[in-house]
Image (cartoon, rainbow, N blue to C red; front, side, top):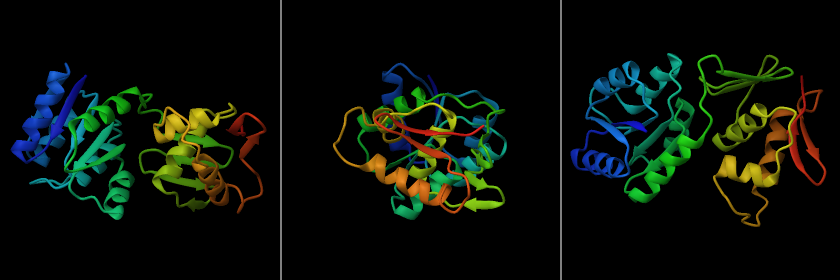
Length: 224
C-alpha cells in the first residue's frame, strides 16, 4: 500500500515510516500540516496516518478539509490527545480510527491493515438512505426527515454498516467483526446494547420502524 505519514516529531515519524516500509509499504513522510494537506490532496494514497498537533495546520483541519473536498482516503489519527472528547472530535471530523501515543507498532500495523480491509467509498457514495433516514458520510451527520439525530461514533459505525447492507440480515458475528473488529464471540451483549440505543434514537421517536430483528438470525434495516 501507499501510505502518507504526517508527523512533526522526527523520532516518531521515522519509527513509523521505517516499520511500515519493512512490511513492504511505500511510505511518504511529511513533517508539517500544510505540506501534508497538499500531498494528501494531490497524490493517491491508500491510508493517511496523521498527528493531531502539527505546525502550520493541525490534524483536525487537514481531515475536515479533505472530507469537504470529498477525499475519502482512510485516516488514522496518531496522537497524544487521548481524552474521550479528543477522540470524539477526531472521529467526528472524519477520521476512521484513533491511536493514542505511546503506542506499540504492532497495534498501529494491525489498525492500518484493518482500515485497508474496509470497502472503499467513492465520491458518489457519500450519503446512504433508508426511507426518510439519511446518513451524510462526509459531514458525519444523520437525519430522519428534518430531524438531526446525534449518534456516538460506535452507533454511527453500526448504523452505517446496516445501511450499506440494507434489507440484508446481519448476524451478531458479522456485526462484531465489522463494527468492533472482533473475530471471536466475547460472550457480551455489546451488539444488543448498541442496537437498543440505536433504535431509541433512530426508530422510537418516529412513526416507522427501520431496524428489524430477524429472530434467530440477526438484524437488518428494512426500507426502500
